[in-house]
Image (cartoon, rainbow, N blue to C red; front, side):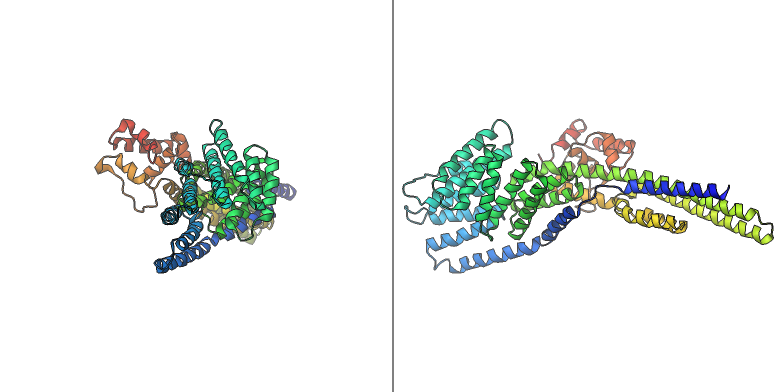
Length: 548
C-alpha cells in the first residue's frame, strides 16, 4: 500500500469517525438564557426546606402565643389571631387550614349576632374546601351562607363573592369539558360581577375584571387587566403574586408567547417557594411547558415530581389527580428519549470501533510496508515487534467490544451523560493519532453504568403514585405466594413488570423493550405470577384496578 493511499484512507476514516461521533453527540442544546432559567429554578428549589422551616417557626410562635394567652383574650382577639393562623396555612396545608377555619367558626358563634365574623368564618371554610378539591362541599358551604347586604361591610361582601366565584372557576378548570365547564365559568363570572360593586382597591378591581374577561374568552383584555393588577400588588404579598404570575403565564401560553409564559412561571415558582405555597400550580405549569414547548423531558420530569410532592404535602386532591395524569406521560417519554439516544450512541460507537480497528490495521500495515524494504536482521526484528504490538491492540479492542456487549444492559444514562466529553477528547486523540488513549477512553466509558439508578428512580416515582401497590398486589396472590421485598422503596422484576402494566402498558413487547428483557422473559413472568393468583382469570383486570 502506498503512503499516499494510506494517508487518504486515514483522512477519510478520521473524518467519518468525527462525523458519526458528532451526529451521536448532537442533541437539543439549551440557549444560555434557557439554561440560566432552569438553573434559577433549581437554586430556589434547593432552598425549599429553608423557607418551609421559617414558615413552621412563624406558625409555632402564633400557636404558642394563642395557647398561653387564650384564657385572657376576648373572643374577638382570639378570632383575629386564629385568622392569622388560617392565612398562614391557607396555601400551605389543607388539613391545618381547615382546622383553623372550623376554629374560626366556633369562635364567631360566641360573638354578637350582629357581627360579620360568622360570615367570614363560613367563607373561610368554603374557600379552603375548594383549595383541597372538595368542590361540592365548598359550594354547599358557601351556598347556605345568609348574605344580608344591608348590614355587612363591603370587605366581607367582596370577599364572599370573589371566593365563591373562584370556587366555580376552579371547578370549571377541574371538570375541563365542553358541557359543564362553560356553565360553571358563567356562574363564577356572575358572582365576581356581583362582588365588583363592593371592591374599592385597584388590585381587586383589575383582578376581577381580568378574571371575568379570561373566563369569557377575551384573553388580550384579561392580559391588560392582570398587568395592571401586578402594578398595584404589594411587593410582599406572596399569595397575590402567586395568583397573578401563574395566570399571566397561562394567558401568555394561550397567546403562543411560550417564552414569556416560562418567565412568568419561573417568577411564580420563586414566589411559591419563598412563601411556602404548596399548591404546585406554577411548578406543574412550568413542567408542562418545558415538556411540550422546549422538549426538555428530563427537567420536566424532575419538576413534575416535585410538584406532585408539594400537592401531596398540601393535601389537594384535584391537583394530585391532574399531576397523576401527566406523570406517566412524562416518565414514558423520558424513557423513550433515553432509549433513542442510547441506540444512536450504540450505533455510532460500533461504527467508531470498526473504523478505529481499520486505522490500527492500516498503521500496522504501514509499518510492515516500511520495514519490508529493509533487509537487515534488526529491521525484521523491529517489524515483528510492531506486528505483535498491533495484535495486542486488536485483542484489547476485541476485549473492549466483548465487555461492552456483555454489559450493554447496565449502560444507560451514564453513557449519554459522558458522551459529550468523550467526543471532545476522542477527536483530539484521533487527530493526534493517539489510538491507545482512545482505547482507554472507550474502556472507561464502557465500564460506567446507571441502569439500576433508572429503575430506582422509576420505582420511587411509581410508589409515590401508588403507595399501596405492593400490599394490594399481594392481596391478589395466594398467601404462600406473596412477594416480600428487600427494600420497601424498590420493586423486584415481577412487580416492575406489573407496575408498567398498571400504568397502561400491557403489550409484552413494549414492556420487554422498556425493561430491556426478552419477550419470553416477560411472558414467562406474567404466566408464572398469574398461576400464583387467587383468581388467575381476572388477575390482570384486578391489577388495573389497584388504587382506584
